[in-house]
Every structure is written in structure tokens, then in C-alpha cells.
Image 1 (cartoon, rainbow, N blue to C red):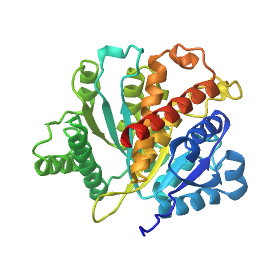
Image 2: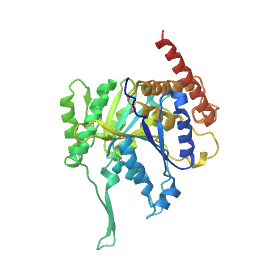
Image 3: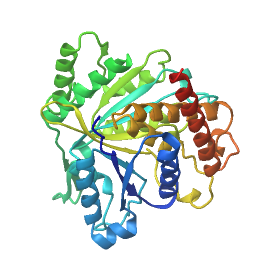
Image 4: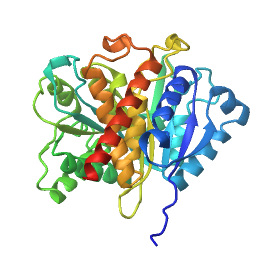
Length: 366
């Protein structure tokens, strides 16, 4: 008899306000009775209140278990502005997960007119750690009374190599061009290290088109691009800016998922994936049942591709297709010109997923 495979386990990181509401919608879609893929959910409360109560220990605990399961789904969380408070859990999670890459893909949303006429996908491969976000900062007062702010930041060759390798493997898998890059002319030592690793990766993947550009030219030329699928490697700060702009070019930051990815140091293969929506907690929409759950639902769909089972792959495809078919039919939340509530949109996605999986099952058995 064939050996029964263990049920894949997903660490569910609960959040705040609308972020938690949208996570609940995504979990409705991921129920085994909907997608046909058994899953185990391991819950951790990463709400602001619980992070404060545990002094962020709950964040470390969730990350520890996620490293074991390899899969996590995170809701948006509140980042307090008060210095000395618990801060954002994202930096802790990226460090604890050994994350190197944040992956976001802008793609055309049916019936939504994109900016600049773009229609092919644009993927941002963002360095997940170091750079401006891990920098040490301080201020000094000069003898003349002027105040100077200083910052020291770093990047490592190992992270640069991992990001470069993933950039080219992703471009090869998706048939895209590697486009853009860091400001290596101004920062030959710091940003030049990243450029060196991208150039080395280009040598390893001669069949992948490579058009290196400075980051300012990358921003400018994106508004002229319309026909090519692109994969853009970026430093942490640059990638943060690029990904928000690119997603909005397609009509909504709520139109795509975000993946935080950790890699095996020896093989450079994906080891841990945390999926989330790229938007925040949207406090103005909290409790109104009108927020767009699209990105959070797609985050769940993306995570299923890393379950590595035929049922997981089918479920992932069915969710992606169902979300975009619903939008094509005008069944959307108000931000995309529709009249559906949050829960109604999820209901429609669930209905379509069940229908697709049933039809596919029927066709496969004939």
C-alpha cells in the first residue's frame, strides 16, 4: 500500500483590524471541503495587543514553527508609532525565517485599465533584509549648531547571490526578461556588489534576457513598457518603492499577493514561504465588510503551490482562475468598481472553485 503523506501544516499568523478580517476570508477559501487539499492550520495571535503582552515572543514562536512547516499565512498587523513599543513584526519574521526575497507580481486585472497600457506581468524580486531597513541611525550636533543625521547600512554577498539566482530562475520559469538593477555607478562598492552577482547569474543563465539598468532609469522606463514580461531585482528600499508603484500601475495594490521567502544556504532552493497581502490594516474599512479580499485570497493560492502535491497545484490554479473570472464578470468589491461586499466576493470565489474542481475531476475520470 502507498505510504500516506503527512498533512501539510500552515502557520496562520493572525493580525489586526481589516487585516484580520481579510485573513478570515482567505481561510474560508482554503478549507479542505472547498479545495480538496487537506491542510492543518497552526494559529498564532500576532495582533498588537498580544505582541505587547508577550513582548514580541509570540512573533518569534510563530516564526520558529513556520521554519519547521515551511508554510505560513500572515494577516496585516498594526505597527505602533511610539518609539520603544513592539514595532513591526515583519523585521523579526524576516530575520527568523532566514528570508532573502520578497516576491510581488503586478498582473493585469480584468476590466481594469492599467496605467501606461501595461499588460504583461512585472515581478519585483526585492531583497528582504539589510540595506536601509537594517541600518543603524544616529544624529550629531556640529560645532556650528547644525544637526547631522547619520546612517550605516549593509548588504552581504550571500544575500545578493541568493536574490540574483532566484531572479534568473524565476525569469526563466516565467519566460520574462531580467530588467533594471541597483545604482551601481554612484555606489560602486555597496550597490556594485549586487550588480556583480546579477552579472554572474546572467552568465549562468545565458538563455534569459538581461537588460541591466540603473534604478532611476528603471522607474522611468516602466511607464513606457507595455509588451514584455519583466522580473526586476532590487535592494530592500528600492524594492519597497517599486513594488507599491508597480502594483498600483495595474489598478490596485490589492490585486496581488506578497511572498516572503527563505532559502537553503547550500542549494539556494526555497525552504520557507510566508504569504501575505501587500497592503496594510486599512482601519477606515474595518468592520464595514467592503474591503477587497483579493490579495489575501491570492496569497493563500500562492502558498498552495509550495504544498507540492497534485491536489495543491489544482487548488491553487482554481483559486487564481476563480478570482480573476469573478472580476472579469464585474463581481468585485467597490474599489474595483463592483458592488459586492467582502464576504460576497469570497462566496463567489468559493462557488467557482468548487465548480472548477468538480468539472476537472469529471474530465480526468473520462
